[in-house]
Image 1: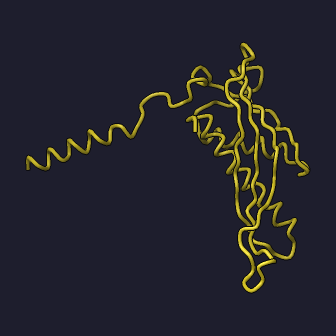
Image 2: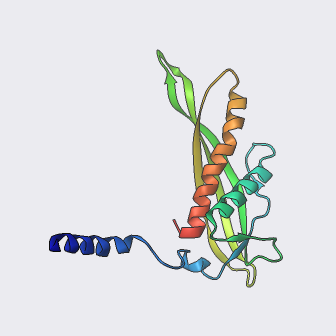
Image 3: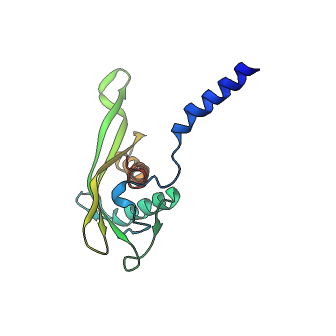
Length: 167
């Protein structure tokens, strides 16, 4: 009975270090509560994906819940994003034919910059890469176009995690 109590106390003492109470935001983002997410810029050859990327990032930030999304004139900071790369890499080849690919990995890389609205200083910046995989059917372009929102979702989730938790 005493051993069980000691074991319970030991487990409770060890597990208290696994959770952080209070604000988990990075130090440079502590004063920021609202973010504006304007339409993304696009430096790739993918047509008409700017609004899709910004919408996906906005949804990921809303799901995360660390920041409130607001218009630029009411936000504490602005999150500017630029799609800098969308590329596919072969992941699996056909059985018996190593030259033909049956599955691709689609990678999307976004450059981001968070700017404080009050003094104009840059709070955070960097690149985030998300990915998804898709199988090849008769129409590769359609397969890639259908996989692109999934790659954007992974990219947006990683960006929300970086802004909300610092990693």
